Length: 88
Image 1: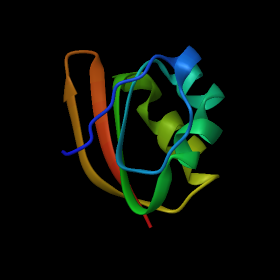
Image 2 (image 1 turned 45 degrees about the horizontal axis):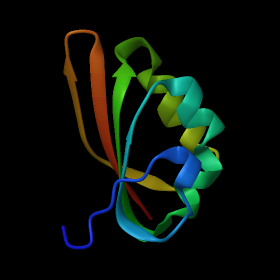
Image 3 (image 1 turned 180 degrees about the vertical axis):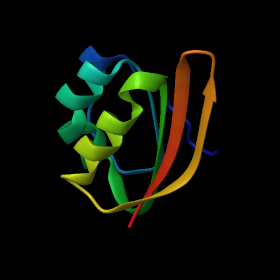
């Protein structure tokens, strides 16, 4: 992963990336969906983590309203899940 950059939200300027990592609760992922998706090109990946198992289906359904994607991997540990998708 070349040119990896971690930036606090208050200093964030959307730029296109091959991989977007979003580790935060569902309500924030919904509020920030426009920003998250603005960082993606066709074939970009989004790695969602820190998602409660009970909210995973809601996350999938919510993002499906705004983009076409393929689920690459999904894992759960305890009450938490992670989801890797690729934008089509």
